[in-house]
Image 1 (cartoon, rainbow, N blue to C red):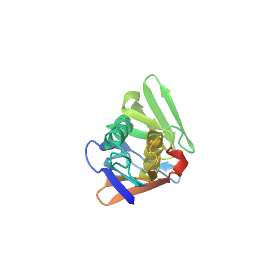
Image 2 (image 1 turned 90 degrees about the vertical axis):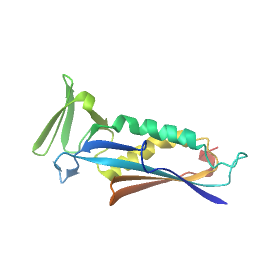
Image 3 (image 1 turned 120 degrees about the horizontal axis):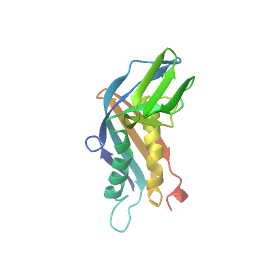
Image 4 (image 1 turned 90 degrees about the horizontal axis):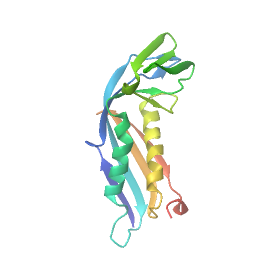
Amino acid sequence: MPTTIEIGGHAPFGFSAAHTGLHDGQFEPLHGHSFTVTLRLHGRGLDAAGMLVDFHLVKKALAEIIAPLRRRTLMPAQPPGGTCTVEDGQVVITCGGKCYSLPEQDVALLPVPNTTTEALAAYLLEQLLPHLHGEPALRRVELVLAEAPDTCATVVADLPPEAGQ
């Protein structure tokens, strides 16, 4: 029987962070969001204990993945058309007509081309997928990242049956 479980939607699966998206080679104004992560796990069949997956393990992995983003400025490590360097404890990012210099400990440099909600959602799901290996009943994972009550991005990964075994 198909089963879906949902994890997240509020603390500890939310985080506040600043970011600036790139639009046509220019950074938009630096601003922040209170992001919320919701995870939906779809599968077929339950284990001997009646579970699709152990909630505790998934919650722990999701919280660990979110933690480095909490209360940071999220920036692309290699902004298209720009530069990013770390000098004397400062992250210096330039693109278009803007240059940001921020304390290194306050920045999360991410392997994304842009810190849009869509790119951040994909990054989070990529970080989570290795934690879901060995879960043979899982077939699909959806991660929803909301940046506001009326705006979110959903990314989906289908898991082949042999990947979880």
